[in-house]
Image (cartoon, rainbow, N blue to C red; front, side, top):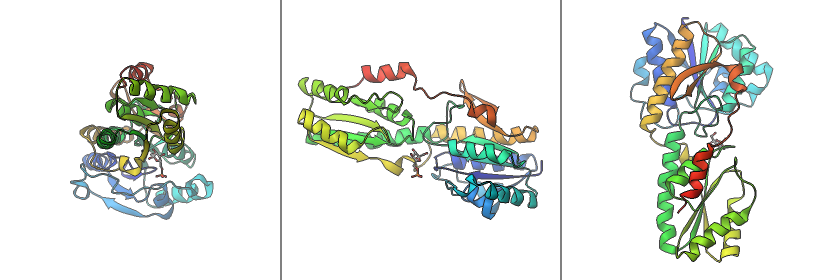
Length: 321
Ligand code: F6P
């Protein structure tokens, strides 16, 4: 193996730069050339690239976002463009691709494998929604960012005696909501995995706190579960407590990566290169029992693990403030 390409795809996630850096440094150790692809699968189709050497990736461990930019490529869903991307790789003598991204990236990789391209994936998304891996790059930083933001919102909420409804990201998963909600002792945490549509549980919890003499309240809701504004209106209607909504949005994707995301990004990047050097094809790097492992991409897609840990969830109810 003489030349590899590296790209980031889907939502940017803190730690992606550490993974890119580790791919470049590890490849250099094995005498492998690295080409960086801009804007994920889009850049593969249009062949927008940059040669990457260790000097080009120094001082990026601490940077948020991805130096290679990213996209959610609609065109890559079309076989015609996947063939174009594969031809570009062959024309440029690239032996394998390292793709860093979330669920969509992994699905793209499966289809790409059919074009005869060897692809190694690294799970990178703040949502922690790649089922085969206990960890995805960016989650730790995002959960910390959400926690800090909610702490600040809480200050205002206490000062005014209000209820704050805070919507966090996560796509179809509630990990950011669970972690940030528990860390900020939310009165109610609404997760896609557990939501039964019963608003009374939320309003009753707030009423109970109110009767206990509290003057401020916090509800953390994962995006897409329910409309945060409607929920705030309902809380006001049922409890009489003034309620305000904050949608945290993209701040959760940005910022300096935590030590954990830098560390896991570095480990996963280096591991992906070793997989390729050892002659393996179409693998995904994953974390299991806190150790690095890898699966075939096909096998990885069949691993189901969509449940929030039930002990953690029970605890989140027990420990609500
Ligand atoms: O996958 C990361 C994520 O931030 C999700 O939490 C969110 O649902 C989505 O991306 C937003 O995507 P976009 O950047 O396309 O608006």
